[in-house]
Image 1: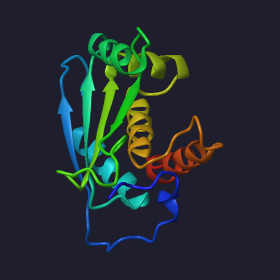
Image 2 (image 1 turned 90 degrees about the horizontal axis):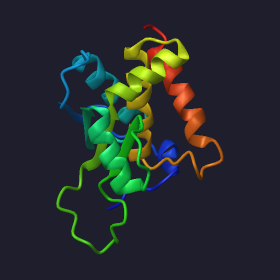
Image 3 (image 1 turned 135 degrees about the horizontal axis):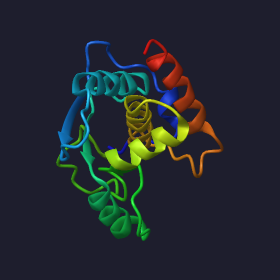
Image 4 (image 1 turned 60 degrees about the vertical axis):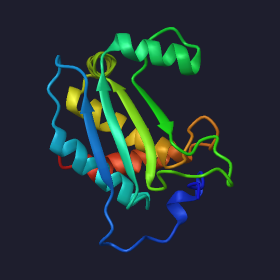
Length: 166
C-alpha cells in the first residue's frame, strides 16, 4: 500500500511501541558524522510524521558521486545537497510490494552540505541535520515544489522542535 502524499501529518499516530528503522551508510571519509544522533533524529522525524514502523536508508557521499546521481535522475550536471528516492514512487497499486515497510533512500553530499553550512554561517552538523529532515519529509510524501509551503512549514517546525536543544 503506497504512503499517501501530503496527508501524512494528518494521519492518526500509530502505536507508540512501533519504531522506525534507519540505516546509515557512510561512503566518504572526509567528514566525521554523528551517526547515533542522525539515527535518533531520523527516528523522531519518522515518528512525528507517523511513518513508524517504516524504514529508510541515509547514505553520505561526496560531490562527484552526487553529481553523477543528479545528472542521471534530474538531468542536472552538478552536485546537490540532498536527493530522496521514494521506494513506492511510480508503483501502481497492483504491483507487488516486496518491501512494504521501506520508505526509500536519502542521499546527502557532505561536501555540498559543508559549502552550504559555510555560506549560511552554521555548523556542518546543523546542515546535515536539516538535510536529514528535508530528505525524510520527501520520503514521507511531501514535495515543496507542489504543496504550497506545507513541507517548508513542517520542516521549520521539526527543526525547532527536534533541534532547538543543540
